[in-house]
Image 1 (tube, rainbow, N blue to C red):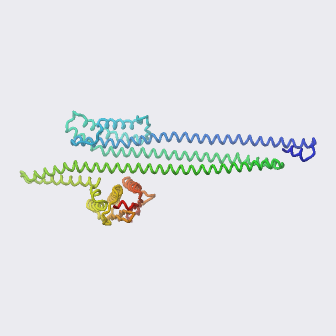
Image 2: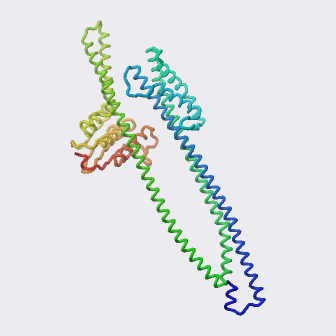
Image 3: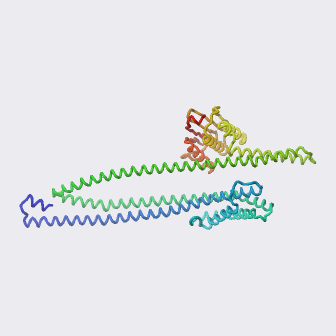
Amino acid sequence: MICGRVSNHKPPTTNHQLQTTNPKLHQMNQLDQQVARRLTRFYVIALTVIALLTVSGLLFIKQTINNLNDDGRVLNVAGRQRMLSQRLTKLTVLHIAGIPSADKASFDSLLVAWSRRHAQLRNGVLSMEKAYVVRKSDSIEVMFRRIEPSFQAIYESFVRINDARSSLAQKQNALQVILREEPSYLQQMDDIVFRFDAESFARVKYLERIEWLLGAATLLTLFIEGLFIFRPVVKRTRNVVRRLAESEDALRLANSQLAKANLELEITNRTLVDTRQELLRTTEEKYQLQRAEDTVRSAALLEGQEEERRRFARELHDGIGQMLTGLKLQAGKLKKGEFPDEKQRLRFEELCNTIQDIIQTTRQISHNLMPSVLGDFGLEATLQLLAEQTAQSSGIAVTFEGTGSDKRLSAPVEIGLYRIAQEALNNAVKYADAQLVRLKLQRMKSTVTLVVEDDGKGFSVLNGTAKDKSVSLTNGLDNMRTRARLLNGDLTITSKPKKGTKVMVKLHVPDSTHN
């Protein structure tokens, strides 16, 4: 282009001018090629390093996720071992007592599954739809060795009870062994499950640290690329542009190319903005879907728990309760007879009193599981009865304040509020060292507010959880929050050390639910 400008606007070049111009063009061509080679070489190196870091991170994350999937299945199976042992114990008690069971599962199949899973967890491989590796630390190995005597004692007792050749006395002795060893076994299985969960969580944290390291390495590579590649290249390019500026046509061409590049950059920016908005929308939809799934799962779990409580309460009331009542009537008839001496009469009266205490305890357990008053008379009457029974059993002053209205809420709302009040009262009695607990239920046109307040020692609240408290209390607070969320309500816990604790639930309900 420089030669074209000379031929159009100036006289024909002389030999001296050609000798002067050609070396400049040759030098510029060499400079362009040098810049291109330098840029290509360093850019390829930088991209290779970034690609290696990215691929290494993806492979590591994939391997870790596979391991975490195995950990999740192992944690599930370890937790299920507790349920199987309790289920076998229940079937054993019902079998020896001669009580029909609604559980149709085969005792043999449950026992085989329980023992097989225990052996697989102990040996380190779960054989299910595929082989899952049980990654055990030294501490978990120690826990399995420690739990083995309890497991073997319970397992041998189950086998003896299941043996048709065993006498009733042998079965009863085996049941005593089971009942003696089961608390220790369940506690140790809890420790194993929590240890599995803690180690799985530690591996997740390790994955996060590796991700941070890979990200830092990628950013460092980009920084080095900008410092030692693009910066020198830009400097050399500036020199090239300064030399090319001597040509007006070259400058005009460069301006045209720059305008085109700006236009393409603007289009690219708009595309990136649109892509980012779409990504944000997709992420929000995924988050909302996950929350909806969690809500449905929690609702189903709580509904299952309530149904199981109803069933068990009915079995206690209609089964054991009726049998105990019959036993009491039979004892009453015998009490009217003559006794050889006063000592036997006193022992028989003591037996009658014990039967009455058992009947009262059974009724109390059945009421705690699912109070019939809740379905017959509504939430206020049930909360009043709960306050009276809690005060009677704990010796703590418990007061209830209601509206006196006979309007009913929907069944799920009444059950949810009752469970929250029950859990809050239980926490106040067990942990607060309170002298007075106030239970209050308020109703407005479209809101229902439940307040449980005590004057106990309180606790420190950090991010909605109790610090330095037992797992039972923490789980209780989480259960209350879950029930409030499923009822579309707000739960607030206010507490300070030595200042007492206040639990408040506020629900927004339509007017139709009060009818």
